[in-house]
Length: 452
Image 1 (cartoon, one colour):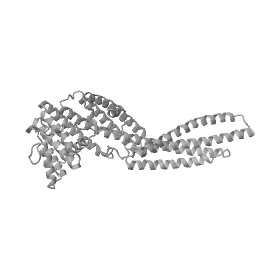
Image 2: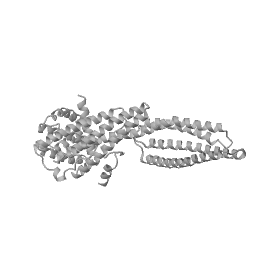
Image 3: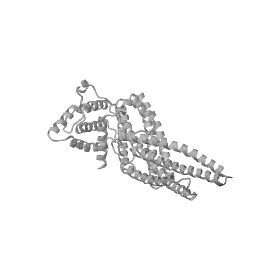
Image 4: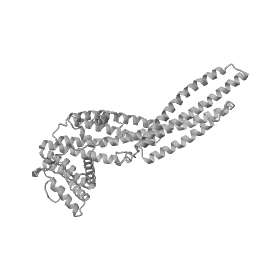
């Protein structure tokens, strides 16, 4: 419970969102009870009952008919059933739900997942659907249709250029090993501390140089030369500190890129290569600053200062663009993972209807959550386009709007969790491999329907 609670009360910037789980199954005693005709799942061979269906699937495997072919066959048949559930006939709705669960069972076998667990989990749901009154079946039908529409939208989202990189393994662009992430974070924190220390030193030296310049007024002869030499030394140290500040800033960006899982490998390589080029430019100027002494001429010092300023002015927008891409990628990853959560929340609505629970409070909250996600998605896409066009400032404005929408989505998510807790449904968000299989079956069904 603590893990779930903490997952939903923290800000929307999550590494991943916990997938949903199916309701727990019947006990062994319940799973052996006979079903009447209305509650049976009809297999392809015409045998009634979940037990017969699973047995038939085993026999088919023995005859060389694999479960993948069975899944394909049933999905093709379910494609026609989608049309039927647009109506309101109770038996059509029951048949669709039972056939969909049947596909999930065969996919469990195909993937080598515990068939008994699948059977126990899904059989309970078959029994619940069988007992639903017509008004509840209509409600289930409405939610099922909406769920399939959302699944279709999510699949289309993942095909868009901006979101294509987010793979199904947690919907991240790449996986960063925990140890590598930890080291990158340590290096980032170390670079940040050094950066702040240098910045503090930089401020003090800046004041000291101004003070020495004031002291120079009115001096002549050896006193003037001595004070001037002291100023030159301070200025050269100052220029070295400025160089180090820039280098530490670049190092911080580099570590953020290294540890980011929402940037693809190609994007990471591209950004790191550019950072490497900029580091080389700054280090070159730093070497020149280190070579300055009290004997250096004013012109030499001015030349190094001018070169450092030019490097920074050229570098500054590039750093902003890189940071913008990192943050924007993070937002993109959150959008994809949150849209995936949207599908899981619709599944929970299904479970609640199956169990006869009231969804009148939860459903509008999920719609609210979805609306903010759509708003964040559109602003994210605009921000990304502007960043790619080099319009950093304009891109940041849209990025702020995307961030604002995600904060509102997070507020709605907290309300959703509170409602789920009130209905004792919060555990439905925990990971479960049967639920993963069901998701995959639903996506394949949507793809099959789209191909028609």
